[in-house]
Image 1 (tube, protein in one colour):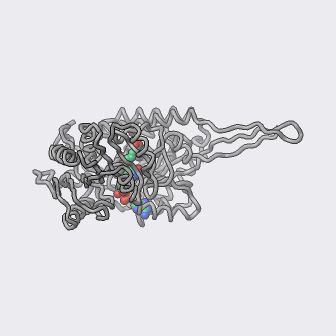
Image 2 (cartoon, helix red, strand yellow):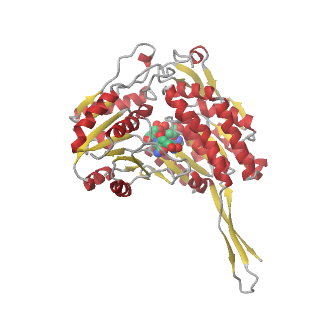
Image 3 (cartoon, rainbow, N blue to C red):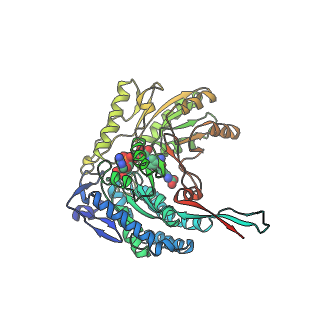
Length: 497
Ligand code: NAD
Ligand code: 6OD
């Protein structure tokens, strides 16, 4: 992979169109800029959908459901999904380049997580749909002949898929793959910050033989733009969304019109709990990832760290030393380990928390500002990896989701009290516990109010298991059979014999 922030982007800005009914279309004169957050440079322009464009995409999806796609078998769809997975892997470098340019994330991360996992989602849900079963009962009837009462699964119809920017291909395919496996058609609204891989996937869908109208992409923003037009559209039968909790509230209001079901994966303020009996090397390594991976822009990231007092000082000084070794490089340099934030706007938000921590009297263990970088990275949305101690539990920095490369570390003395502190949050997405005491691990995992609790690991999950958040971190679970629950409806059939 070449360096210098990819010559392709510098020489040949890309213009992205919508993907509707199997074709790339420019529907009106409106467009917006796509910037590389690693440099701030414009790398392309993107068409912005108006209500009529979104309607065209929804109508294409509805037609597809009425056509041959609506009659495909699970086996046929599984075979097509595997071709989509193969198509992504065949064009691995194209997807990788697009994702790295849109997000600025280090190529080492995108090549190990984003692109392979994006492809894996199609294989996993191809497997899943082939093993899906429903219940059947033989009933007694007064005439003695009986009845056969069973359920079949049918697709919901057209699914609106609204995506965030932090893991664009991974989180989009996490929803599109099960939706298609179940026989639905989709209209995807990628984040305005990261429009490219969803668009590229249109080409792969065509190559894999996905019929026109089954996979559609409309570009734009949220309110009064493509996101709102899609979620309000009466032709959309269900909405799956990953993003901020406040956006989830707006989408839920839109979905209330027509009583459409939603599946939401929302924000978090996740905690890690480090017990004195842990393997400290593993806890440091895992916490480095859970705080700084993807520049802290992972919904599962841990911005609150509670460390049992006997190892508090050692933990803080070792995490500081490791954080100070993070490498900001050209994102295409394999040695880079820390990328930029997604945008200048997001950097302003994160830096406002850096300022707030100072005002609230935090001890800044490391970071707290903006790194001094050479051009062209000097134009990027970088912040220093930052660690604080000494803040009260009710400070904004400890309670609110920042979504940056930062954490607050606090000591604790008592297991029950730390569980209470972890649970004292409007969110409930994820936790990581570090301990070698097996009984404690089970006890604490059961007591913490989250959708997923890791013990001595982080971001390790079989894609067949349920994923989602408690409290304001989400509604419903996706993953494996749980995705099939959202992307299908059960129809009860009772046959009198
Ligand atoms: P966001 O909510 O700002 O935007 C997500 C998407 O929603 C974008 O495509 C945006 O255009 C669209 N949108 C915004 N307003 C809308 C509206 N009124 N109607 C319809 N669509 C609208 O989120 P983001 O900034 O892209 O992502 C970061 C957030 O996502 C963080 O809060 C993070 O925790 C959360 N997240 C959660 C998970 C999870 O699995 N729980 C995963 C990734 C990210
Ligand atoms: O593990 C996954 O598939 C998943 N949905 C991860 C979400 C990460 C959020 O940023």
